[in-house]
Image (cartoon, rainbow, N blue to C red):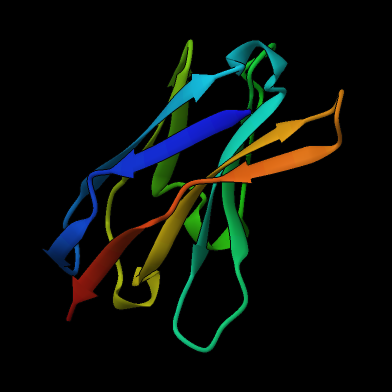
Length: 116
């Protein structure tokens, strides 16, 4: 079992920055991939960025490349968001993937609102 708790969301003007944090607890050694997903009202939940816990290799959605940076240290994962746009407004969820059990865990989400 893994528990994920996000923090750092809020209201920011377009062009501004925010840093999201996700703290993982529990069986963190079983985590293979950690990532951030987001869901705007009426939309599906989409991948924003992921990072391998073993190699730290990263993957980004095209819409955030060059603006967002994912990083990690041990049981925490971060998302530095720069040059924010109104279309980045969404609830951001932390995710962990576990290959040994084929399970995903999710945090409860943190709201990011970008005003124009």
